[in-house]
Amino acid sequence: MRKELVLALGLMIIVLIVSGCGKKAESDNCADAIDKDNCYTELAKEKMDLEVCKKIGDYAPKVQCVNDVITERFEGFDCETLDPDEARDLCFFFTGIHLRQENICDRIINLDLRDNCYYDLFNYKDCVSSATCDKVNNETIREQCKYITGARSILK
Figure (cartoon, one colour):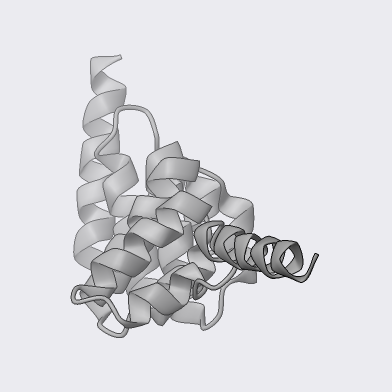
């Protein structure tokens, strides 16, 4: 009887170990990874969770992570939950571009990034009206916008 109990307990421990009960959380595995940024990006895409991108230290890989997750999801509602403003703005930027929706660009706080969002949109046919050009703060971009939208209206 005692031998059977020891055998049963041994089997239970093996099952727990094999099933992953003894594993670290996935995000902890990224902390130990050689390429942490890529690990967190892949984890964020897998979980469709922009919060994971916050764990990336450098700006460029963090931007790429947010872009990759947004590309997978195309949903702007998650952007509101992000903090700081920089992450939220990047989320709105990529979502606005991917969905080609000016109203999402309107929600960007950083004026330069908002102007760039409009700029990317007016490069798509019929995404931006001349009224949108008036929202652009950067004079050069605003004039380019007006020129392109004016040219498009002539070609209609």
